Image (cartoon, rainbow, N blue to C red; front, side, top):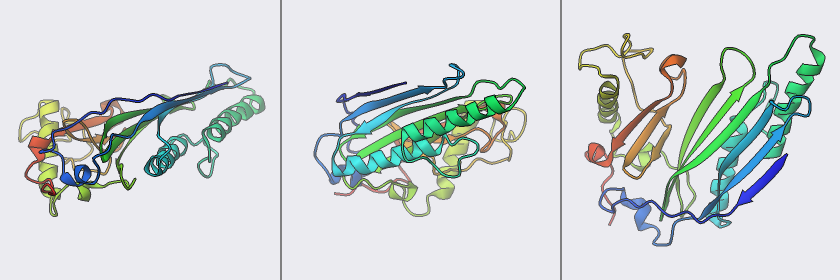
Length: 259
């Protein structure tokens, strides 16, 4: 079992002031939040191939940084619940121990072979600039069956107030229909669909003949990204669906810059 924390100041990714909604840039002229990577790994004593591990960003010990850190920790431990856990663990170590103990109990109580379990978490800072931070947390777990399951959660924070931001913080009122049309157009481009091909056909691959925005979004250096996890709108074989829309694509529905 090892535990490593490396404090690394990471360079900011800047976006043109004329593109991003001004609320994020107007509130702070300070430097971006510095962050390091927290790593933790724990293996079963009964089966070395059974493990729980994570590596995700931890921000500086400022007021906003600590609140963001609590949100990220919650995302890490709540997405990797073992089968019998009723609620998320309070710490990474508790989450790892609960996951491994459940596997080991199953291994010692059943006569048939129990496959190794694995749980992995990887966090990535997608954007870190004055006033605005975007983070992606990918978790993967295998506890037997045909395949493991991965889930990606994206979060956007006002780095000054530490508030987690939603779509209404970026888009003008009544944006929904226009945004859905942009997402559908981009998805058709990705899948090579014509304007009349059904989205739920063989090429489209979706459950329904429609694709709509969700709240799993992130602000990146070039625009806004929407991510759909396995089984959310399509079968597992389709994989995660990522829709990247540029700020230029979105300019008609973004909130105006605040002076």
